[in-house]
Image (cartoon, rainbow, N blue to C red; front, top):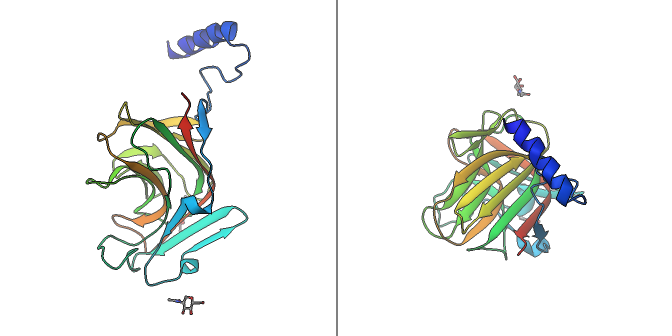
Length: 218
Ligand SMILES: *[C@@H]1O[C@H](CO)[C@@H](O)[C@H](O)[C@H]1NC(C)=O
Ligand SMILES: *[C@@H]1O[C@H](CO)[C@@H](O)[C@H](O)[C@H]1NC(C)=O
């Protein structure tokens, strides 16, 4: 049934939208979205407060590498949160509309028990989404499998947050892998990197390139 429906839609679409080569079945997650401009200002770094950033972060040839050790200090002296090295997208906190994070991410074998993507809130609870690496699987928190066998390969990760509909979808390599309800209105922002959670390994690392933030048109 589903493949037929898909074909039917593609056929109907081809009648009316000959220009649109994506049609319904292989749409790019960014279709209908527009990039917001990003400069280094928009990449706010968080890292163990007693270290220099270069001890836990590098940005070489467009690849941002973030790492942290489970014994590191938190990102500021007044919090008891676990160690992290993260990019916090600054300047595009959002509380309405449809927003999207895109990045190509890479997690080396040996990193586990760590969040690599977050949609952060500004009031409790702290997050509405964490994508966590658990023994080589990418999961929604510790719960739902998003993508298996992620070690040592680049993945295109697209996270779409429809605030007004309270809905979040995650695409990996252009395939939708997760759709969840949000936890209600708030002001949100995107993060990526490494942030120790549960049963975290001593060493945690993720790499990111071609990070984009997009907003749905209209
Ligand atoms: C940070 O870098 C400065 C300048 O290179 C150096 O003097 C300082 O010792 C470094 N701090 C740490 C904690 O490594
Ligand atoms: C990860 O590394 C361990 C230890 O070297 C190895 O046994 C395992 O097969 C590796 N896993 C993957 C998915 O490469």
